Length: 122
Image 1 (cartoon, one colour):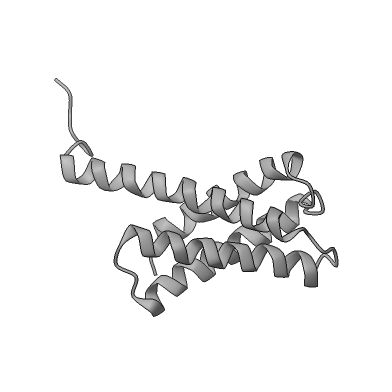
Image 2: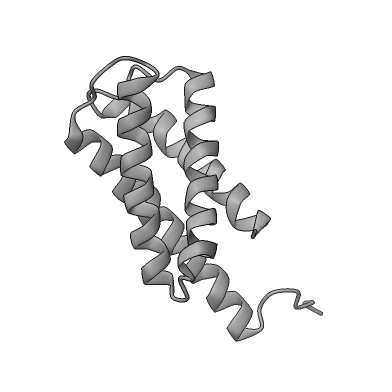
């Protein structure tokens, strides 16, 4: 399992859900412990899903993260918090999470291919 990807996705999901709870209706039911559990769960499921489905491109990884995020957010709120969030809110948050993850993966891949990572300026 790719631990770096798992940790990044957890942080991205937590911050996005935390800020989205104030702006998007229906997501204010998540308290900080719920946010932490949801972000850890969706990061783990997405990272494990990548290993099972053998996703090899960033686009496939982002689509998988979008689907896993939307389902996890919606079902967690429905089953464990016992609140029915609007499906549009869950889809919007999933799109934001996968979009931010895609941009960060692109930047990381660009830094590795261009040789900027670890370069010493003299």
